[in-house]
Image: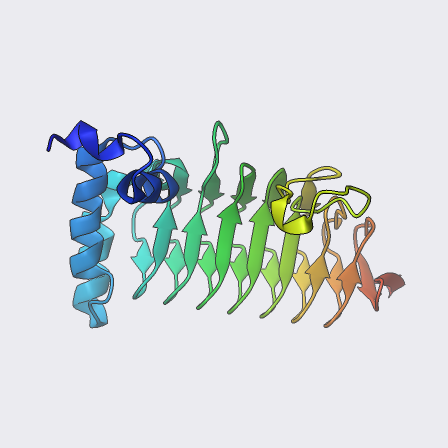
Length: 240
């Protein structure tokens, strides 16, 4: 069988290649399969060194000094752009899936914590320089999600740009696309989002704001304030 035939018909192999690698040429996808299969779980400094060297050709961009932990998963790597000094901790997921989208762009020195998922469903994600997503967060976009420079996101937080369902549509939810969106989600520079926070579609957060633990942000938060609660309300202006 020729390499091009692997994408023919509706075979499971074709579905796997489309979901995992997108438009990447089959030969390159197979090469990445081999490299990640051999190196993904390799422990220690040697594993980090080899992943930093041998993963490079498969991405849209791959900066200097990138650290990739064990069992990190990638989808549509040709649309993943990784800056200098980025750290992707063990079992994180970076998924740029979609048709015609720009994908995921991680600025310099971005940290993605253990078990955290950054993924697209036809949307785009842009994370600014020095931003940090702690362990077990989810950042999702079927529209556009922007996280500003130096922003800190606490563990188990959920950032949602799009991905809504229509409660007034007779179509069963399991058959809806889940792609409804009210607009992009923009989180400004130097924001602190504490643990277990949910930020909903189109609910922007201004630069320098602080969001208290467990809050649900359903509407825009002004710059430089402390907001808490469900739904999140401004508590006070920061004293800076």
